Length: 150
Image 1 (spheres, rainbow, N blue to C red):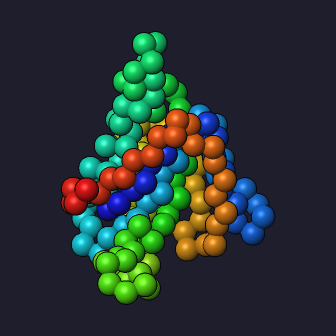
Image 2: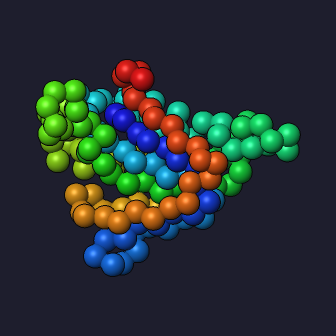
């Protein structure tokens, strides 16, 4: 499982002009599911994201998590995180999960966050053409891979 995590002042996602998810201070998560992902990948990624210490404490050190600051979470599915650009100019998505598995894991990821962390999670719409608008705070942008490739 791969994720791009951005600390944001605000973020929203729209599908066909309608807002489907909107947050103020918190984290925007672009989430990709790999073909060989298992439940342990989902749990690792979710737990890592929720506990990342990327918000400033009183000493201006990034020492607090989104939970510590009462932030919100917006999760947007993005299979292109599995785009392999090493060969040629057209990315290969052969390592991305097939749509049914990806949708299942995306929904389970959101449910896991809701249940374990008792946090409201806003979302995009799986497989929809989405417009994502956000103000990155910092900027702070991190990449995660459950297989620890990077």
